[in-house]
Every structure is written in C-alpha cells, then in structure tokens.
Amino acid sequence: QVQLVESGGGLVQPGESLTLSCVSDGEFENFWFMGWYRQAPGKQRDTVAFVRGDDDTTYGDSVKGRFTISRDNAKKTLFLHMRRLKPGDTAVYYCLIGGSWGQGIQVTVSS
View: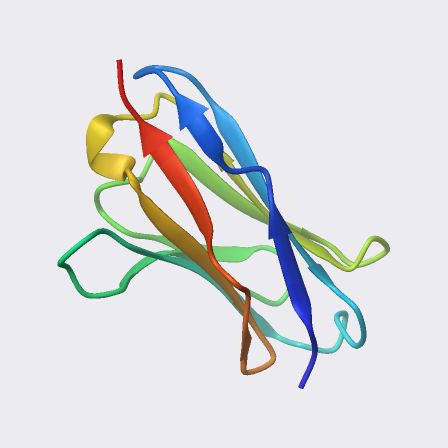
C-alpha cells in the first residue's frame, strides 16, 4: 500500500472552480486504476470519476462535462479538475490508488 495526501479543497461559490490533488509517497505509475469518490453528510460514498491506464476515463452522471480526472506519473499525482461547481457538489472527496484511500478533503460550494 501507499500513503496518499490530498490537497486543494476549500470553500467556493457556485460556478467557481477547484482542482484537487492526490500525491503518492511510493508506487504510482504501475497502478492501472485510480479514482475519486465523495461522501456528503448522511449519504453513502459515491463514485465521482476514475481513470484506467493513462487516459481511459469514466465519470458519474452528475459531474459529466464539468469535472476532469487526470494523472501525472512523473509527479505521482492524481488530479480532479472541477468546474462550474454546484452546492450539490459539497462533500468530502477521497482518492483511491493501489487499494489505498486518501485522508479525505472537504469541498464546500456555497454562496
């Protein structure tokens, strides 16, 4: 397993953008599957997006066309670029790489 550190969350207004980062302290490039998930208060953890290999991406219906997942093997970092954020995107976001979860990071969208 690897240790993952997430960053980039925070409080934004509706319509704004954020980019989340998830950095691995060990192996990264050889992991084929990586993903982002989120959990809102009182709800189950849902899939936001995942990438298989370098660029085979899949998105949840609620974020299609607004979010982009990408990976940088040289930086050992998984990204989630979030645009046109909505209050419904408010949640704790988690990355998953190589069977390890990030610590979770809060994203709050509110006016």
